[in-house]
Amino acid sequence: MGTLDGRVAIVTGAGRGIGRSVAILLAREGASVVVNDLGAALDGSGSDAGPATGVVAEITESGGKAVLNGADVSDHAAAQDLVHTAIETFGRLDVLVNVAGILRDRMIFNMTEQEWDDVIRVHLRGTFNTSKFAAAYWRDLRDESAQHRIINFTSVSGLHGAPGQPNYAAAKMGIVGLTYSCAHALAKYGVTVNAISPGAATRMTDSVPGDRRRAGGAGQGQRAADERSPDNVAPVVAYLASERSGWITGRIVHSAGYEVSLYSNPEPVVRLIGTEPWQLDELAEQVERSFRPRLR
Ligand SMILES: NC(=O)c1ccc[n+]([C@@H]2O[C@H](COP(=O)([O-])OP(=O)(O)OC[C@H]3O[C@@H](n4cnc5c(N)ncnc54)[C@H](O)[C@@H]3O)[C@@H](O)[C@H]2O)c1
Image 1 (cartoon, rainbow, N blue to C red):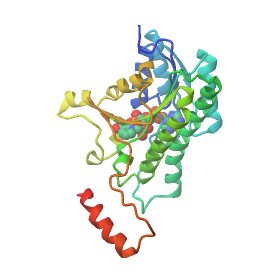
Image 2 (image 1 turned 180 degrees about the horizontal axis):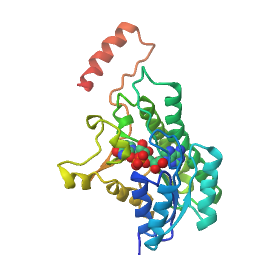
Image 3 (image 1 turned 90 degrees about the vertical axis):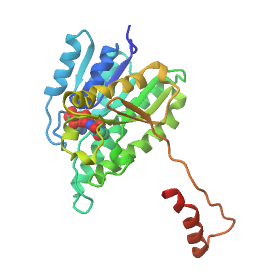
Image 4 (image 1 turned 90 degrees about the horizontal axis):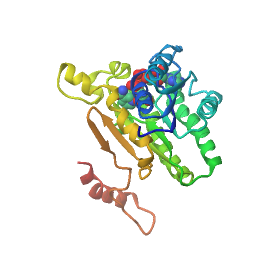
């Protein structure tokens, strides 16, 4: 008996890295998995069916159920086909895990429009595309007691503001807003929506200087490599994909190495409530007296 027996999941970006680990664990826990991956290079260029084909073979050879889908998640129509693939192949859809992503790192003053657009398109539009068609399917079922799940991928690059990744940070914080919005919109259809902030050693972190990213893990050599494995992000995704996680929605969970943390959602920490329009001098005095001490 697996935790996810009978459930059907789509995992985007499942050919490599964290998506691959997630797809394999979901299948091992009994889910039927649509393994989506364009097989793009880290910068989003090109395509290659090889990695996703390998993951499907790995799952099916060990007795699991999986089907290949090579869609570019940033293509609206292809994302619709991706959702249809799950329903046509396995009869239903319970879980959508939006992992697919690329990097085009550049400081803000050097970034091109293309670098900005490409990263926003794959991460933010890609997450919107798949979520829209999954949500439309679940809304049509109109089952408040359903246990459907969307699990998005955000990043510490957005949550903490990595200076060399303005496009990626913005896309990943856009995904946080999308997560909050969808959590509120879809609760009445039995859908929870959460975001994972992962840390793991993959080709993505290989491309980033070590001091700019907390990929998780401590120590040296094999022990550190084991701790930084993308396999360590998969369990919390499998938990969120399960029927027992229905109590949590609209939240960010950080998972890196052997750490799993719950982030707080934004809320005001100091409030100044006037009774008439603020005069500039008075406002300056009040915010400096009230806000500044909170920023130390
Ligand atoms: N590795 C980390 O420490 C880390 C940290 C923060 C956030 N993330 C996020 O986690 C997710 C997975 O990252 P990873 O490190 O495993 O990266 P990765 O590069 O190993 O895997 C990403 C996968 O997405 C696929 N992909 C890219 N564009 C696609 C598209 N348009 N359609 C379908 N598939 C596409 C790629 O082919 C690749 O297989 C990403 O969203 C990333 O931003 C990773």
